[in-house]
Image 1 (cartoon, chains in turn purple, blue):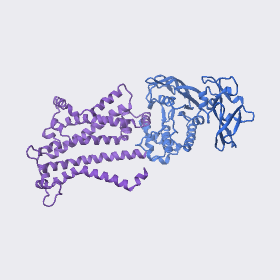
Image 2 (image 1 turned 180 degrees about the horizontal axis):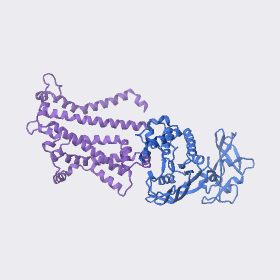
Image 3 (image 1 turned 30 degrees about the vertical axis):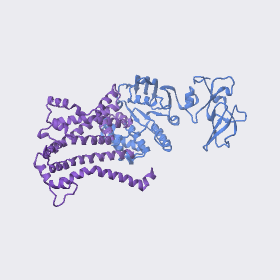
Length: 279
Length: 331
């Protein structure tokens, strides 16, 4: 192990592979970013060139700011994503705790039932979901999206978190019980902090598909005041003419908040991993 | 008064019958040790007493009160766990204070009890540290401190020393013994280590397969084991068992001889070759291969025996134990 680590050739190869992968992964983002700052002509003439004095233009950003209520879309996306993540983590962790901690009849069956959603895409039920939302009057509200995304995220959350909760020391939970802590205090104060890395993993897994989703916003909440960012950006993509400046600018701005959320969660991930190793 | 009394306590997990008709009394101020091989049910019994598992049937009384349906926090017990089980998000002071805060004790009382416990355990300098900043021995002392501040009717220890290294284990063992003297409290201590059981206990409860095999003081059990299991479990090195017909032709019983009861004698009844010698300085343990089975002999002091020597071993008839085919003691 030590020898392999000390070998400079291995180290070089390892870092080389990682850097190569990073470049490949970041290339599309890079192309979007540079082209969002160019004139329309420059985008088509030389898509890979950096913007220079001649081709530099903020026209895309100006269009985005002027047309449509971009900040409202932004806010909607943020509310939906953060709200859904909150409910996925809260209910997922609670269900996982019950499955991992208590012996009751049907525990196993319940676990399997909750995990079934991993294998069945929620979009199959779109028509039924739409009918349900119409019946409850939730169409064109952000709640419609939050509820659907919570349902979509729960199976994986329960599956991952219950596995982690089983590893939390029984002695610790029992010490809490003997000291007179309620089951809720044990869950929130003792168990949740210890499975924080797993929570971060679940959050990252769920966040990006929710933020990027076009399907459900288009079907359940297409009204102007509840449009999400992804749906809002579609106004620039026409059947015959697409305003590429505006599309690229909107996408560039859409990347930012996900990046911030991702950094927050991945910090938690890393902290969790190292604290486990040192202990 | 009795600190704890169990009446025909049973515990099953599904079809697995873990505890079978356990009857037991623990007097006030008594130090009782549950000992047995792993899987004998001793930890389950402790958890049933603590209320972390419900008994399937039977009566549990702590300080005279029936507690079968009382939650653990209100049974007047405190427990020390093998893995310490300190709260990682609280410092030492917070760990000790938590249970008292839950009981809504006044602040001054909490402070006083923590001060007293940390003085007894020498934890004064560590009160503001977090568990991750403490060594294993310190963590275990904090866990014991957390139990002391509650001033429970009954202390429960679940193999508290098995995560410590050998030197620390002996020190902590002495500390626990001193603590028991200082607090004069009733304690129940679970271990699989017969040395801990012999050195700490006022009363030992030997368990096997969920049944109590024998209850008594350490010397009672050592001198007067009820059966072959107890005889073999207590004492180190453990008792030698060999067919009695080796020394008395026609006798079908099993002969039990403690390693320290054997001595080298020209006219000894047993004869064998030395296959291994362990020199400990104060003692010399010799493994001798007799015609039936290898036996261990513990000779006091240092002896010039070497592998391959032929030894004749003798013993006093008073030190010989006999067991019948079922392992029961027979005169």
